[in-house]
Image (cartoon, rainbow, N blue to C red; front, side, top):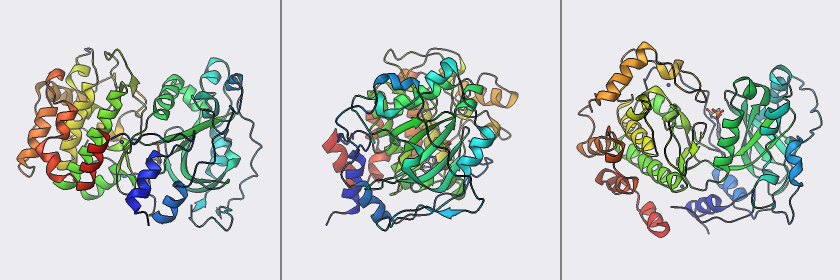
Length: 432
Ligand code: AMP
């Protein structure tokens, strides 16, 4: 009988959007930040995993559309008006996994936030995975899903736990983005870039984007369901993580960043708020809002979150993938200490800062103090932190980007090796 770990590995290599089995590649800082919404309750993992591990039914011999359909949004019949009473989703008898109660939020949002967009913006947001990739895939519509409980709310819409109506009834997180609001914030190109980057990534610690589609007013993203919710919420609950837990997260994070950089993707906004946890508690990088595909590797846009900004971005210099090494150092510190190393006592920037999709271009007094500390490398590691962890932090937080420890070396750092589970040692050796 297959173990949960073995089945999980199968899931990680299963591409439900294209049917292509991919090689399993290797995968607001003050404590004053507000808690997020209630995390998802724990699902029955074995049933969910069995469904995920089922063969892919979605591969098609031919593209679902000619490429010109990119210009025309999928027409979706108007859903029946929401009665106001939450109802269970209508799965058939095979559907043993409970996806919870749908609250009618999509209809409410579409009434209050919807509105079609036109012109170039409409073309940019005509996003449809059935025609975008190398492999022909199934065409998706909202009506193809049983809607379940809300998982959270983002800037541009809600996220729901959903199940595909067709066998074998995959469970995914369906994220909605309201087109008119995307246009209002002028981020349609950024959203498109985020989707294009994420759809090509395959790593156990990078949240999978299985597919996407759109209608007149919304873009829908079919995301891997992160069963244990937000990492940031866990961090807020416990204040800081143990050395062992931090080390294991940082190992996963480092491996994921190494993978991203090998694909010439710089994330540029690593922080706890952008990390989710999978069913087995594994870390998943979940937000690519500020990422960039930069084969040339030199960028000047200042972006990210004040506590995590590296010196070269504050100084407006060119930056490269080494910005993620810096952020990894900040993250390691925050996991172990519970606040970011350069956060000032009254710097509550991360709870009041602009949403992640807005660049940080207007430093306030509070951020200036943080920036001063960052530029002077003015931070102190409390003595509750081990010497080994402090050593890794100091090797990542180097003012000169070129002096930051390479990710391959960080993976072999004693603090990482000491806590690394045996299974992951074998996995990494097989895939490296
Ligand atoms: P976002 O719009 O990505 O910020 O998502 C809003 C909230 O929805 C997050 O803070 C999570 O609580 C939840 N969420 C988003 N994506 C997922 C996912 N793939 N699995 C589980 N929960 C998610």
